[in-house]
Image (cartoon, rainbow over all chains, first blue to last red; front, side):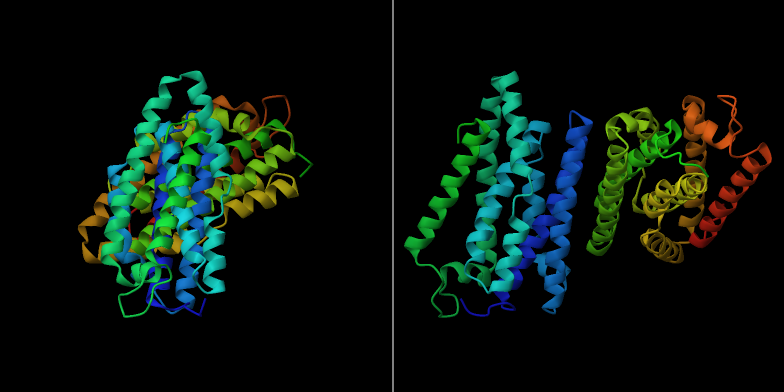
Length: 223
Length: 223
């Protein structure tokens, strides 16, 4: 690990994280309107607020590095907006699955990347990816919904698979567009060796997939 | 001023304030999608987040007084939901005028009531009603919009008058429904003298109206 704090790859990583948090704020605050109770509405609004707090921390770090957050986020706006437009939840349960499964895969991936970076960036990424109670809330609510109506499980399992498919499709688009970020992981763009060889990259995807399957099981859903 | 901290009127006041903040969070986070730029979107999202922080402070105070926030808010949910449903902004400028004019009148009113209460409630109300930069932001953006297209001013002036009309209508509904809150101001419900006589109540409305007219002038709009 070297001091990579102002490298193009780190700017990209902070930018993609920042816009991800800002769009998570949008999504969660909008989905709060779907909540079946005041308590659920408050819980989702609190999560939205926490995501905005993360966005502000990441924006501040970018400014500290001399980069305008808006410029760093710009390359990733279409990716997230397209993802959210193509995966608008039809109801409260789909919004909870999306929050849990989507944030889970994202956080796993960012944590893996963070391990390759300078300590200050790593600590910030770990902080904004920490689970602030989202998971326990989503698991509790979705298990209760399935217990009340077992047919819900089939529909939500399909929804979970569709979310992963859409995320992979957007991730491929980012990987194709953002050389610095891709090179950080698999190297080779500027002649430098990447952080991971192909076997390590395969192992990373296996870990992400395993964790996703574990989350779906926690929800009571087939992965 | 006596220790009124757990009186029905104070519970009502904290309840109406708390639900007002929660619905302001909803409104501002949704209106952020109308923003013409990323900077404006971030600014409105930050305001929404600040409103949610106020909601949490008021909820905690209610719990400290042994009252469930949900129960305290319940009598006011329909009032705010109807107000927001009947005043959905058609565009970004209407949302800014609504945030500025609506929050301004609300904050003026709550501050007047707070002056009649125990110090702890008063300090909390003053804290959540403090202007966290909303006003300067709205004034700056709306004046710029009018400078660019003077015809905007007529439409937004009409919009401001409509907002005040809808707010007065909802306030009358609350006054008719919530005896304790009304008695706090004008007294008489339980044989006690109220805090204000009719002349003082008239002066209160004159102050609210004057402040509203000053806000409209600050926007460059006819009141």
